[in-house]
Image (cartoon, rainbow, N blue to C red; front, top):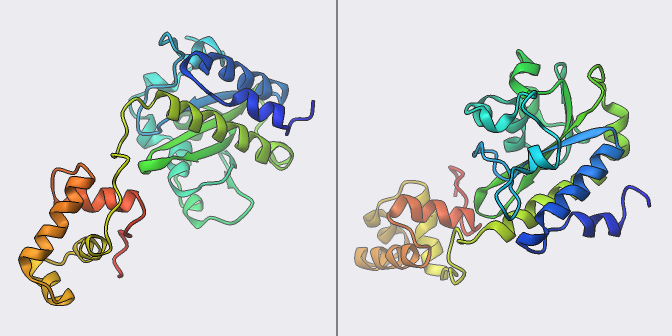
Length: 259
């Protein structure tokens, strides 16, 4: 079986909670066949790591990270301090990294600016192929593939040969894991905003008051408040700021400064 195959994609796909461990084992076997050990994270902002249906840590019980390793789920600063998690906020495609820098198929100036001081201590690895997994509602997952050979820090050839395939498997595993384990939706399913609601929120996002918006769209102040309140109700938001943020998460508006 070749590395990139439909069979492998199906193997790492999680279809139900009872299927999590089997899919994790499949991802582990693929990584090991490439001389790598996978380190999965369903949310880089959360030090918790994926678990199976019984709550067992997959990183420990499937992927082979044990008490002798500097395990990332016990590091409360990993989300803020690790160069790998930082990179996942600025890149959506696979990359590889060591203490000398990040490498991607297309240049990314944001990655070039990331501090790599004390790389091994902060990244908890000496080199890795990293796969960011950008999920709905702004959540970011990731899987890093770390060489089993302690002295292997140059992953250039591995990245060219394996990066795209490992990226596909990592995204399939993490995205389906999150979908299966997400018992509560971050936003209600019926959250379609009207054209006028979106228009009001776009102006609110750049700091316009209700009065200013009413003058811009030639409607009353009460009408502007009505549309923003309706949007808040649809998005299950508790205030104006959260309404704007959730609308941006769904792609209705942009949080850039320009209209």
